[in-house]
Amino acid sequence: MQVYKVFFRILNKQKGMVIMYLFIFLGVSAIVSAQGINNEKAAFETASYNFSVFDEDNSDISRSLVGYLERDNERVEIADDKETIQDELYSRTTNCVIRIPEGFGKSIEGNGKVLPMEMISIPGTFYTETFKSMGNQYISLVRSYMAGGFPAAEALKKAESTNKEKVKVDMSEGRGSSTHSRMYYFFAYVPYIFISVCVVGIGPILIVFHRKELQERNSCSSYSLFRTNVELFAGTVTAGLGLLVLFLLLVFFGVRTDLFTIQGLFHAMNIFCFLVVALGIVFILGQILKKTSVLSMLSNVIGLGMSFLGGVFVPLEFLGDGIIKAAHFLPSYWYILAVRFIDTYKPGDSLSGLWTPLGIELLFGAALFCVGLAYAKTKQRSAEA
Picture 1: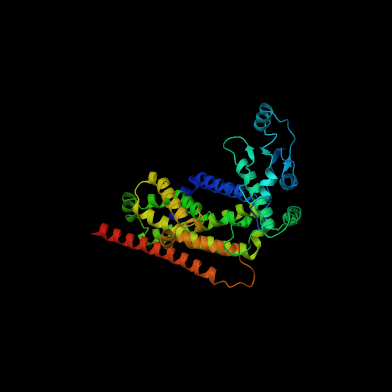
Picture 2: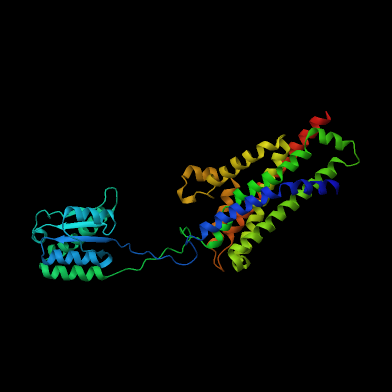
């Protein structure tokens, strides 16, 4: 088992890089998951702003409009002069100053054009448009009741009654929801993490053992090429399983007992299947590359490419149809499909949406290993010739 022992001696020199990658990515996952996105229902909250109003009309309609604006916003009293208004706006005491012109109420009662309200806010902010939208909404409601035959006083009462009704809105729980569980973010980025760590950590070892001069020297020893490759394969698998265990251990500190649920088991199965893919990629690179200096670059190219095109970093909903079709040829796409399925899984649901992605990931991994073995066989024949 000399080759097996040397494998881990070399791997020991890469442990700093491996641990750094793991902690960086898990730290990012923890930060993202802690920003309030969890498995609880997320209710919409009404935004509230400060505003000031000068009612020069002082009619029933104008007072009713001001009351409507005060329902979800806070009215701030300020002096009616230009310098004071500017000072209060820039000190953020008030966000918008509204001036209701004289004759405003009568213009609403008539069939002509409604006198516009003057609104002042800091240039480049959205407060003017926000309050204008609320004012137009209220005016349209009142005029709709008037058009239906109600007198102005009755129309104001009905508008006030309508505006008191509130609807509770919650985020959808169905599949395809924009919210995810806390555990989702610790497993969603596995394709990039595992490809980066495996390529940077295991890749240099395979490159060293596949160097021509080292293979020629080993061929003169009692160690057969078959035995060397078997021990290299055993070392690669052991290192991969060690990475899997270490990753799950670190995830445990982030999600605690959630890892020991059925979803945690499915996530562990999913990352094991993708680990086969990552090791297959490393197996091919170890056969082809001659210099370890290019591994870091290739790990980023492959990892980022798969992650962006496969729906890991960019949600699948934002990818075009053409990209989605091309993503079917990437193992990261099937990995993220499995992660999304597990995130919304409820006991009793059909598991067909899980077994298919897992099976395809394993097929990708097997195909990569077959390509690597075929290349190694061709390379060996060329050397013997």
